[in-house]
Image (cartoon, rainbow, N blue to C red; front, side):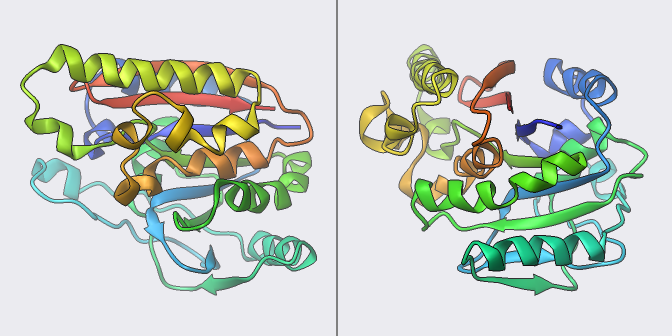
Length: 259
């Protein structure tokens, strides 16, 4: 049974840069058990109802600005899998989860930047999924748990986001304090992920150090993909921390394996 993952997508530059994190993704993809398909929940696709892509081949969405022209020339022509989309719909129906099929939307940078590093040939079918940051963490976890049977078919379920994500910290001059904030939150998170302490994790806003600074209420969409990925591994409940690095002292590039 293939594990599920939380994979930080960081800056869009991860698609082309030579960084510690990019090199990790380059090496991790070939070393990880090869999936038959990928289901990816992206922080950059928000919706009030759960959306499931049902598409033959994705366009590449450049949902960012101010980056090198090279980035806008990249194509990641992943194919979909309509049979798998239908299977996801069936699992949601069985679990009382409302959903809609999306037949046109391409892959946003929360998906294609990391997939390009992990699987550069774009030869694994992908099902793109939305996130709803207004749901409770328990509800997000339940959506992921509904997809757990797919892991038995070697379908890789990924939550793509960033665990510490606050653009407001750009203006703080004391970079050591910003780094301490990010480290404090990330260390708390890792401790409770390792224990699979759902009660504490679901209340991260009040229990975690700097909880609402590391994860501002208006930017929860980047944090919550971790709950979708965890839910998919509910039956096993084990966590491995595979990578952690800081970008600009304030954004965390983390990879967690569940199950």
